[in-house]
Image 1 (cartoon, helix red, strand yellow):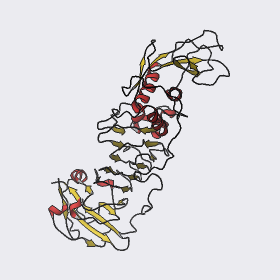
Image 2 (cartoon, rainbow, N blue to C red; image 1 turned 180 degrees about the vertical axis):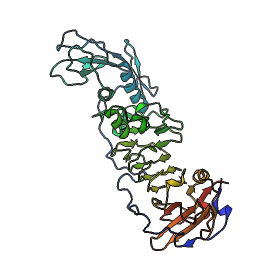
Image 3 (cartoon, helix red, strand yellow; image 1 turned 60 degrees about the vertical axis):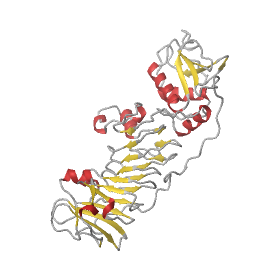
Image 4 (cartoon, one colour; image 1 turned 30 degrees about the vertical axis):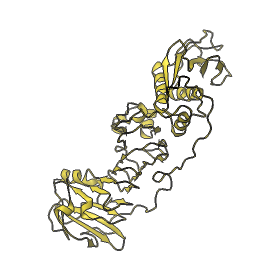
Length: 417
């Protein structure tokens, strides 16, 4: 790759190239996001936790055993059902707790020294779900009113009640641990930094190996039941990640999203509101937006931010950031992205793939000449915005346009060699 400075050394021009004017499109708001900007702590941190199991051998991990469906009664409505919970849901729920905290669960009828968990389903009419004490173990009850029919207990329910048994107060109803649950579990048992400590993608094209972090292409979900469509279009999860270079990929959504890479913050992903969060102490380096008018906020790491289509507002916040464009249509005269805090000399605008896909090699000029690849860097005194405008078709008009609140110089632009 190269940059525009290497291709042609030129000063910036004042005013807009060709027909790029302030009336060409409605400008996004210049107001910064009011919640979770950068690495702030907008949420109330959890303080209280309940009882806990103990790491008796001081190996850094609390090792627990569990049994599923041990207690039962065949009498309808009078006792414990002779059915086990769905084993796949149980294992998934227990694994999610092990992912975030230094606690393990091994299925065994022989109680482990550090703790034993028993899962049971009952039909007592007025008995709430809970965790009654039993010598040497905890018994988690799941209530059902279905008599002797096999019960259907959700993974969310199992997560919640097992969380109670671990000492987590008021665990959230969600497919996986949410932000406050994660913090409480880690205060009790310590954080598990071995979880997803390589390069991990969350969202579309996920390699996280957890259902709650993996989104399906919305087009393939149109024929699925409504509840499955809704769960995919408004996912609810909080990310705990042990390290690596990680990515939020929400590129197939069409809604206007707010994606915040700050630890301890929430994002509006898909059709959801505050539905995706990043646990405190976690760094997610990269983000990919969809085709809506997205707001993407980075963090103090070296972020790669892909706005995608739409009229996006992009913040790098800190670090040496790269704002990457894959298609000319990602930022057009009609829907131009705005870089809200670009730092010349540190941040980069990478248009390599966009220009390669358009079949042009940009060259810096003072004004468009009608040659494909003409690129103008300038400043509009009325809007007080800097810009990069490129004619990819050779008709003397702007096809690709990026605006910035801060100066851009040719060496900031990464282009095909």
